[in-house]
Amino acid sequence: MPGVRDISAEAFISAYASHLKRSGKLEVPTWVDLVKTGSFKELAPYDPDWYYVRAAAIARHIYLRKDVGIGALTKLHGGRNRRGNRPSHHADCSASVQRKICQSLEKIGVLEQTENGGRRISQDGQRDLDRIATAVVEAAREAEEEEEEEEEEEEDEE
Image 1 (cartoon, rainbow, N blue to C red):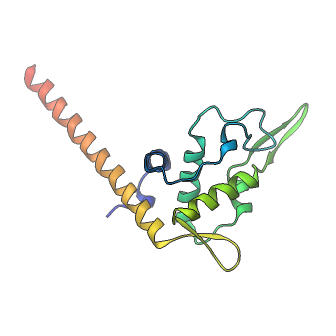
Image 2 (cartoon, rainbow, N blue to C red):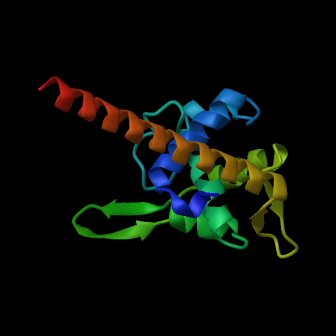
Image 3 (cartoon, rainbow, N blue to C red):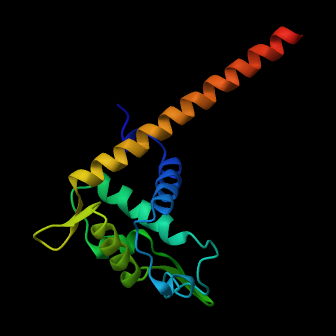
């Protein structure tokens, strides 16, 4: 049975983000359309569904590791801080955004807190993520089979 490790990050994150949006369980704060995701950013994200995408990315990241703290997530989603004519440096993203996403994932049962203050994936969350990964792999197989059938039909016509 294919798991989260077996498929590309991009395919999994987009599938899981759409699943989170469709389910409607994830509690999205009211400030989502206004907030910048880091102090080094100039504007808020253009994508209106960025909260779901970030939640999916965080869930995948925590799935692949034992337990992760908010500080590690801020480093992961940080970026380049352009400092004018001085050299650019890495800057961490907003810890508040990461914390709120983890809290909303905890409310729906995907994550749970550890004794040392980090977060880890729960049993239900692991089952959920594996189910989504399997669905992505099956959809890719079906698309591949359809392509092969179309190619064979084109060859038969010639």
